[in-house]
Length: 604
Ligand code: ARG
Image (cartoon, rainbow, N blue to C red; front, side, top):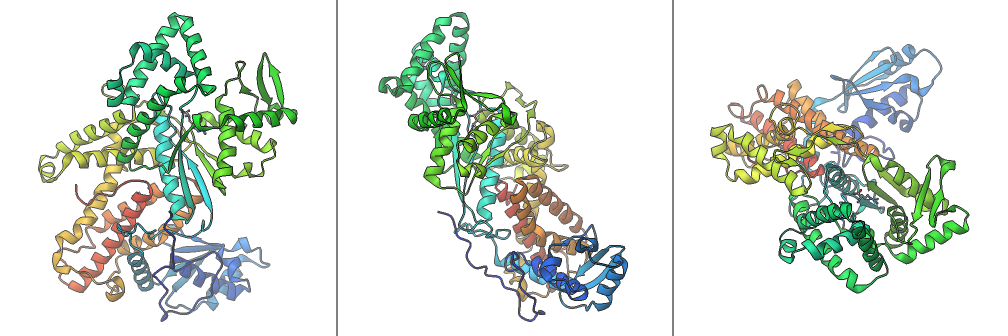
């Protein structure tokens, strides 16, 4: 089902000086690779190193410099100063690299601007996103070709509240699924619902008293939570309620069809409702699974195996694994009444998923509050001798503080979505003039509102806690989601505002030599770096790298508007070159937003 990354329609033009191939690089998808190879070649030739050796040491330079090579990393005999001079003496400017300077142990290289302009804009154009085929676009690579990753995220609990922790898992997980796809992996996304456990016994008891079929069909998520809250209050007063609930859940665990009938409906209807809300967030799952789906037999066998291995101890009828040797405490794997538990279900689920999907990697996007839980079940699996246990990875994240709507605490996902849309709507109304020009303000408010939430969530390192702030995240000023959408809309308006320049020829057919302003160059270079930004994100699993890139690009664009003008530029060739630059910027900003699961807007 995965769109395969075929050969790139872009190739390095033959009129440029030939460069050797370097393993792990792909100039047809990231043309800055070629510039790095050219730099590596000039250093390697001067210092008698291999190009591969030097290539690893060609890094992005600080502001104002394109690439930097730190000489000490090669551990060559002699003074670095002399080595640097040797490189500089031998250096021949060409169409790839125009100059080199040195600052103690560092060599700074400057790429040929005309070549940068031509190749980067052309590559972006050749790899533009196609809404029809949804083919991988500029920024994509084939690192994961032939490998499969299972990504589990969101995973809310049916009949309990959808809290901000679930929202973060949803946002980060959707990003990771997009990211792995962009890197050529075969991605399977799973939503592992909390759809099993004693709370369903409680709800069954509560449903008799408080349940309504009509309310259930209208909004299952809401109705089930209402029942859950009420029956919990009953149980506080009357201990027999809990006993009834436990007995009911035991029947469910034993597979008693009658006890399972209602539960099945609750699950179905909840999933239906969730699917609608995920769709609004531009989030999709290949499969809805859940704690209920883990086979009793698998868990049984697992516990037996742990027993045989001498890892289990009994505690008052309950069974637990002793992981103290690994500083992971003791973890119960089976309750006294024989019913299963969260940890055991995770162990069983992992075993079954490995059987079923034969994954090369499986990622769990779960709050850092559950660090211990994940470490425990990863450890149990590895103690059980499963060599694939090291393919499991926990992508964790910090807390969100202070999220509430103006009506009070948030318990449902749709409350968050609605609040975002309504706060955004008010924000937009403040500008009467602009507001009137918007075609479908409700829809725009919803999209920008969601963008605000997502950007706030992904702007910093995952592990950081942050405080939810509607005003700040939905402002058009500062580094916010609305600011990024605004930047994209402004770029999108260029074609509408300059129809006389259309249809614009491909960048390869334009004379781009007029793009000489430092502002233009900065944009081009940033655009060229995007494929690297994607690769880094794959290593770190940090959406913040993409968000930071989107802000840097938007800032660079907004500094260019004044000087690098399109409308009003008398020289039509120049105006066209500039337009090509802005359209490339629009496409790359759009790609970055899509990677973050955000729908870039064309108008607002
Ligand atoms: N449903 C759980 C909760 O809300 C999260 C599930 C995380 N995934 C897992 N495989 N344990 O806390």
